[in-house]
Image (tube, rainbow, N blue to C red):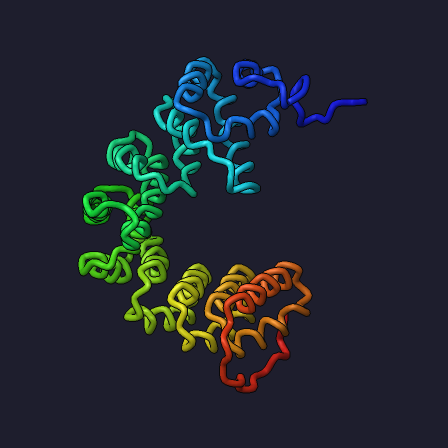
Length: 327
């Protein structure tokens, strides 16, 4: 019987870590998802063994492995390749370091905070620094939920705010830092979001609206509602997303209007937001959108409807509105 293309030679269940690493190190051999999956949850000693082999790999091979690991974790969140990523963030190649940092998107390990701060503050590549700032945003949320120490809370907020205030830093890095610091309920965070909203630099306003949603303070609602009517579809998209995060029913009527927006991404953002807010009006509109000609809209509406039904409580009957446009 022919062997599957994605399977390693021999029986995967009998493969030792050494065999797997030697196979991965051979750039002429195809990379197997089965073998990569066995690198999940490496012990300290296994991590050191991996490090030795990793140091001898060609850069292109490293990039391919990291890209494949990302795909595996998207399909199975129970896989954990943190030891591999921890090693790769010290690689000489900029793209390898960036991909390694992006691999931490689901990690809650507070021991990552210091290396991520170092990368954001000191790495030579702006794309690595920006990725590190984004990764710190997860720990900002954990800090606000009091799931990490007060010292780390102060350390993260201080470092992110320093980047935001430094006008010599690249705009993209300051944007990522603004988005990352947003969960903190601090007066200075409120101030930097307002300042960013008023700035003329490309993209800063967009990030400020995204930050409003992550900040979860109802003071942003009037601004979010206003920006749903912005001429820029990127702004409308972020405003719809922020409205979903804020979760206020007063946004539902505007979001329903955006489900008929000329921009598909804006429509989808509005549909997702309706799923987060819920209520009879949202359900009625989502039900109508499930007959849309667009497969993307039908699928998004189904997901949002499922989300509402999972958490709904008895509500007042919905008012009537025009359902004629369901595309």
